[in-house]
Image 1 (cartoon, rainbow, N blue to C red):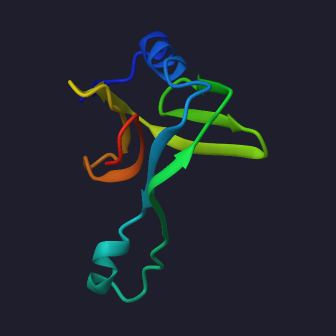
Image 2: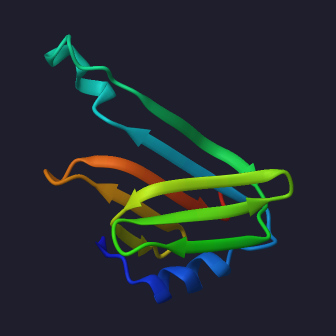
Length: 114
């Protein structure tokens, strides 16, 4: 993955508009490791292979970045994004890593299921 370049990510997001695509969206603040500190409140969200169609996509911010996808009846939104790549199978992978390099958020789009 490489650091987000807004203009390039916007172009990649635009390629998915007005099509049925698969979404992977995940957030975590250490939910997998909360057993190390019982006083730590872990929270997260996860959806994989949710099929969506969005009419508009927008990346914003000064880093870390946020991305919004406009659905017919609402929005999909991810904040804290720092890195990105497009795979050889045309999947768009966006991730947010914390200051220790740990994954905090992931938003991924694909024409095929993950």
